[in-house]
Length: 98
Image (cartoon, rainbow, N blue to C red; front, side):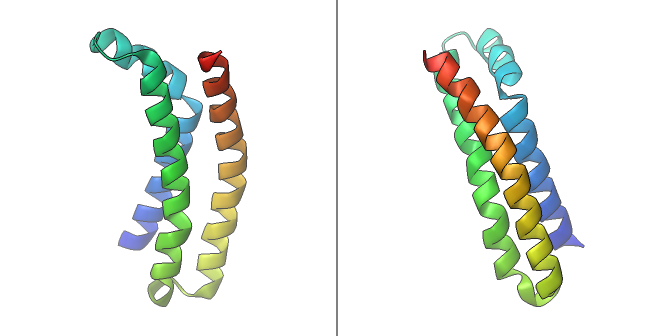
């Protein structure tokens, strides 16, 4: 149960950071004025991608607990979510960088 929570939670946070990173950036930049919004968005995008990389690694490391079919399911779900979310967040980041 703990492994499922970590995997699903990591994917959920990665999707939220990737899709709503621009909104979180404006909130953080207005709350903490000395942080440049461009660098905050870059950090949020990299955190999102790092979480998407963490999920398959953790799933394979926990394969004894999960079993092969669940590991494959988690990896495929992560790949599908990663492709759409990462392309969107990198597109938004490229627009912000100009």
